[in-house]
Image (tube, rainbow, N blue to C red; front, side):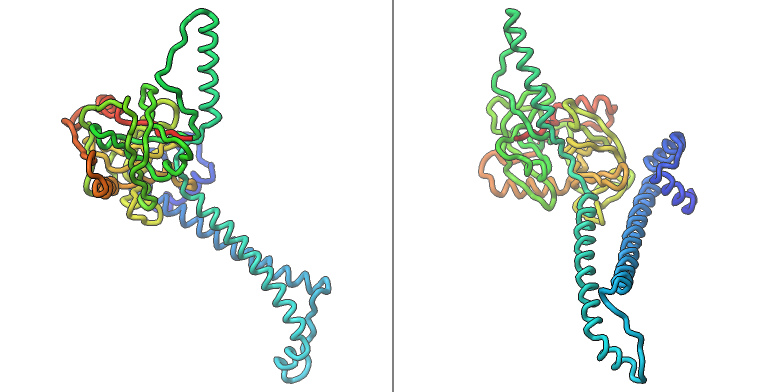
Length: 375
């Protein structure tokens, strides 16, 4: 596609001027061609810089208009120049007026600049959005509904379903996955663990909940490693996936499994950039869809290798998701093992998933993916 046509298409896409057919075609091109997708993302950054320049120019114009208005309303004055030594004469006659005007302009400039800085920082901060789902209201409603059903069953003479232990009323939901099936270690994001105030729980795809604790948290890599401490948590077979030690390849096809809702959800996409937001080498960029609750989802290629763990998405670009690279997970495991005498983390993999179809791969992986909850 010609660069000029691509830029025009990107701008029409962002302004919502495309028909549904054009929009679908354009999104398919982005998904199938990583280079075009990267050009679109770069053009979005360029348009943002243009907006920022326009805001600065508008501010300078408004400041000039403010000074002129103060002169017209008599708050400050402009005396016509007379005499030969114009600069000296101007200073002697108008230094008080100039000082007042400069003070007013300075105060306006400082206040406006402060407001612009605060606004810009706030806008900058919203570029990246962690994918944790806040669900206290939803979860409490579900819990109350379950209690109501139990009451109705008891009144009808039907024995209510007994729970082995009380269920947690969670404030948030995210995702994590096993890295050691024997010693019960799970990896998720650091920002997920930061949400916990009292209790940390992992929940499997059957709805069983288990207590856990964080043994490693690294904000820079956005990684946390959890140890499941619940005695009811049973050992599982060797991991069906392995971990890529080197970086992901541009355009490499990937899939994810996570919990953006109460059941496990499948997604797919490809590696659209080797680095993350603003060339952050800790992360890689994915072209895919992700929702709140996907934080901590594994990023897996067709050979069953974990390439990373989903961390966040970009809010001002559609389909741009960031994942902490798998090499960071391996480094985190090394750091944790240095602090442990027993129950060290050991990645033991089974036959793997290379050469089997996607449906079979999902069946192998889904039992190793957990909801991460807390209150």
